Image (tube, rainbow, N blue to C red; front, side, top):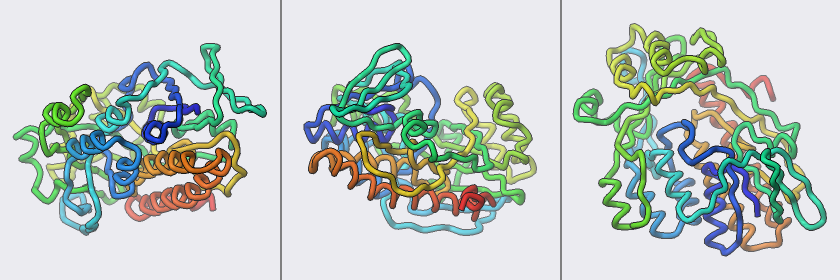
Length: 383
């Protein structure tokens, strides 16, 4: 089986297939796992944790828990003066994790072919052939597009499936957690998530990734042949707003230096409670990057075939519900389980029937949360 993309959904699937004894090969266009910035903190809830327990070897799943911060089970919503507006409680599973740490765990034991830019596929009676920009190709019984929000697999397979701009952009930064920076935050802020929302719906969101034990010690105890990189505790902090409030378009932000992006973020929180400015001033500036927010538009089910999709390739969503990573991990677990228990096309049909339901429900929930807190629901005009 051919998996295009070594993100969370593709690697979850690959780990699940590995446990089921089903051969697969992952192809990734990047030069390495850490070749580009892809975000920082992830919230993993019960859905994502259950998927990881299903696809990972027990020692890898235990390592995931050992490198996941235990967040307080609530989200704090403040106004721009840091006055608590509401506290959203949820007693379920809440783990704040480093995205790169999770990817390294999911990559363990996997063979990934890097520098493989997928261009197109062909199908015949015997299977599917994936073609790459370097002139090579690969044949398999199933092609899985796990290649993200701009998925070339989706563009060929479901050309009517659209991704639209949510009207928002976030400037992402990270704050090293030191004694000095920890002192900036009240104990109740070491939670699932915190957001300060200004009168023009500009938002400063922040959440910690704080490890319960030293990462090196956890690796030595559980998976001695794995050495995790980039595993110091930190607090993720993003400043987001509508494009008209930011005052720069996507190309302009992409051309800015990290220091210039920090200046834009400081302008957006000017006049807010001093914590907002202090957070941005404490950013690890070289790690700063802009992220336009986009979302898939839900579509009707399609006939199953030797091509399918997981993660952002089919149901990209805004981060407003904290569901994107969890849903991608669930995709990998559901598809791997289906393929281990049924003939290929029956398995794909069962997976897609489930995924279209829960995946697009998460897209709609994320869009609605964006409307509630930031005044933007890009799906309203698409109904």
